[in-house]
Image (cartoon, rainbow, N blue to C red; front, side):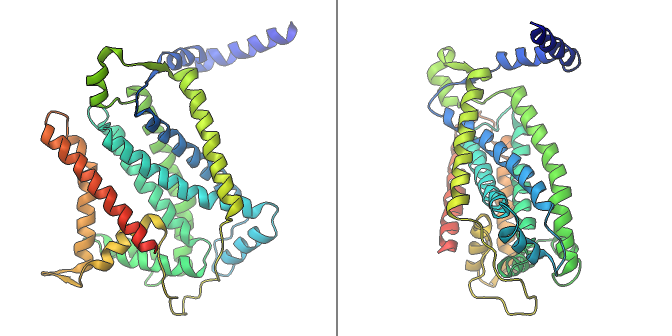
Length: 359
């Protein structure tokens, strides 16, 4: 009896300061639509779980990692071979990063095809696009940190391509390198960006994104609304949908653990900046599509350099995706169809070039 009173007193103490009763009432009031596309609602939660795994494993890796040219590779080697479960934590981080990026892309395109970027969710869409950019930036900056052969030369190629971007490309690439060549300054800057700058931006952007989703709720496709109208079934977010979401998280984590156990993340030979680049150097899969596409463009396209033409074309595609809420507002059937076809073309092309580049 005394324990029950103590528990109530503790709850009351927190409730007076955090308004827990109001938060619970708000969660119970929120509803999630039930229809044939409802499975896509779980993609955001899976992405959030993988982001949380990145934060936890990243902090643990920082305990042993040394961002110095003569120590970076050795510290990862020590983590893999001598630290208890070090290989497991690193593999969780590396495989988790790839799955995080995959589900960010999957979540983005499922949102796109469900037209969930329309009013009043425009800012939610913008924050999602920027979360994808941040995720790719995490992948790019983290790839160099082990300082092995493949990551060194892949980063070199990536910075050379980034330097071809119009206007600010070369200054940005020079700033990231810390000079004309990749060296200690590059490693230090990538480390700071990866563990300090990007996480701060990510926390803020994820917070805004989740808040906007809570404010506007889950979007229902127009076709579902037209078919079901007021008869559309819904379920309580708390506890019904939340319990299902947590179950999906458990399954997603088990999938990650299986990958880690069956295929631990490897470590190549230590990078030698003066050695020739090995044959067949490729970026990670999430950069393969633009990498492979740029290889097909001739050296000169009219008066413009081929690489510059390709980069500008890809930037234009990104701009079209970013601004889709402005030109597809749902009031024009032709624009809606164009948005769908455009998305399919981009997705198929990206998948095609990724698979081709991986072969």
